[in-house]
Image (cartoon, rainbow, N blue to C red; front, side, top):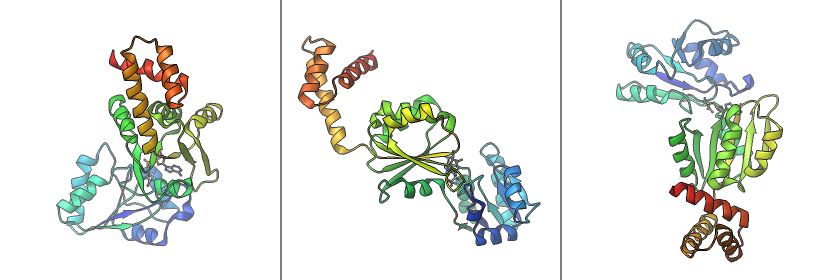
Length: 276
Ligand code: SAM
């Protein structure tokens, strides 16, 4: 039997009594970082049953765990923080268990994404969980492009040293005026939620370098904004064939749509670069 056991995202008080019970009763506790989980478990008087299972050894270690479960052992899977399988290895082990007929159960615990969402003040009825954007540039650009299509609050994980880069990328993708809740160090001593639009956040985080763990909850682009952008785009395309200069096109589009002349100028320059 496999238990997916939620552990705290920063506050030991969030360890549930059932999580403690299940971990105590498990024969094996699979975790990403045996040192980190060892520390957590030692606070509960549990020791000696840790098994390393992470992104880089999961292909080899998954079948070993499944074999143990088939032999009758109870295995619990925990993440470094929060719920296993959420931006963490775990999903492959669940799949393997399902394929091999091993029972899987859950002991729910905190999730950084949901904790951030409920604090964000943004729409919680519909949301899209993005987690970490890919780090390689092409898939990352494709995901950013995809984010423009969502009409739900978007929940994004990011490391503090990459937050400023992400803010620049979100502005580049058209989210500059959108509200964003930067949820930092949730459940910890210095928990903080910074609510501002992405343009404002750029200035804020340039002056206050990001520290700690962050979840971003981002307001989606609206249909109207997309339509406006479409209008602007097609207007630019029409005027580009008329021999007008970039400056003249920017002024004309700005006066017809009410958009900012400098923004339009930048769009025209970017379009030309993209075509080249
Ligand atoms: N499994 C975890 C969960 O259930 O949320 C997520 C693990 S993921 C590897 C780690 C990321 O989660 C961090 O980079 C950060 O974006 C987010 N995170 C985890 N703990 C957090 C906290 N206390 N406050 C804010 N974000 C947190």
